Length: 151
Image (cartoon, rainbow, N blue to C red; front, side, top):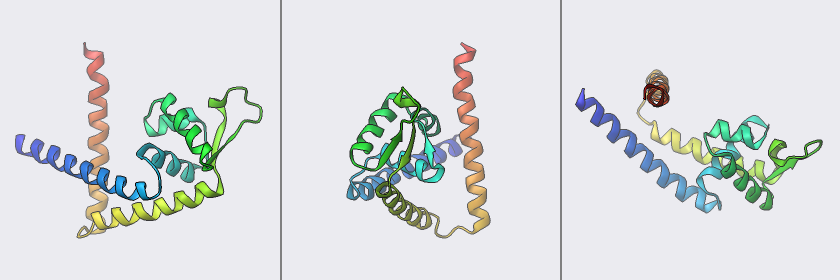
């Protein structure tokens, strides 16, 4: 059991560190930082979201999302639809054409990295891996949440 734990922790740590390096290298060339990438990708996939919705989907602090969205707006990558909303955090945010183009470029870079990372895996193996990883992540999330309730 301990060998499995060590393999799991070591592998996850190695994957995380490598992904951070790749993300940093590629996204620096695009002039972006980690959270900005996730927010732009979510907006590209979903279309429109509020800051609160983005924070929830990306598991980030609402204030951090709001600050980042203000920066992305200043860079011309997102726009707020403030029609009818007195509070900005309730406004829907969407990508500008410039933001869409950047998100599409990020998507291509990410797809390439994921493809290279999965070389040597068959489609059934890849599907089983992601299914297993999702189950493990959900189980660990539940342990984290339940730990506070037990005390």
